[in-house]
Length: 293
Image 1: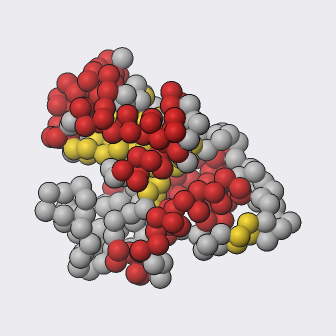
Image 2 (image 1 turned 180 degrees about the horizontal axis):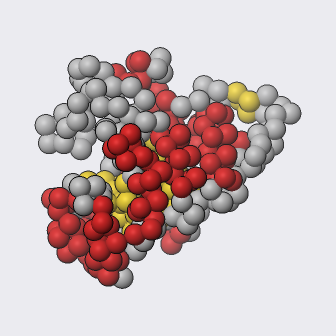
């Protein structure tokens, strides 16, 4: 099991400690992958249902500063040497697909081929409204954007006419990525499972450390692998990453759960770091690594 960590790119820590400095500390402590989250704007009053809270309300203020995910990854890439770097998750349909392809390829090349993109359709309708992107078409845009990304990453995409976007002939998209950038689909719906297995490279799940449920993960991973098999993809190559929120305050529960999570098919976890005790990071990684063996 790969042991990853969230690098805070929101709140006060990016300025107080520095995104690159935190990433370097985590990599030096042993963490094998480093991840950032994504929001472009937040409404003053959130009316959309937040799917990761029982009451449907986000547990952070709308005024929390979010540093751009791709720019944050650039800082992380410059400060690190080995760790996989990625988004958990980037709201794909809100991004310009060709510009995102360019950004991702640039980061991948400059990092030495270390980029993975966790991507999702998002939950915040107000954010779509602010960006003038129709919320109701986000699923179809998501699928089309994946095709556009992969076409652009060939360096010379053929002309493309989609429902929402077209690429003329003769376009060169350089640089090409240094490696095949993996796409992990976030979400817990049947549609997300299907897309994760059929048109992406795997699934990026999320659970709270206080409510880890290995059985539900086992069942959902089976759905993803079935979708892969039905699409003539090798289900053994489907990757599952689990983002464990609330893990810094519930390290013991996280450690106890790792053997069962591994047996359920989880290939990688993303935990939170306790930045009030940064000197403990190597010990935290060591405990997690031992439990994840």
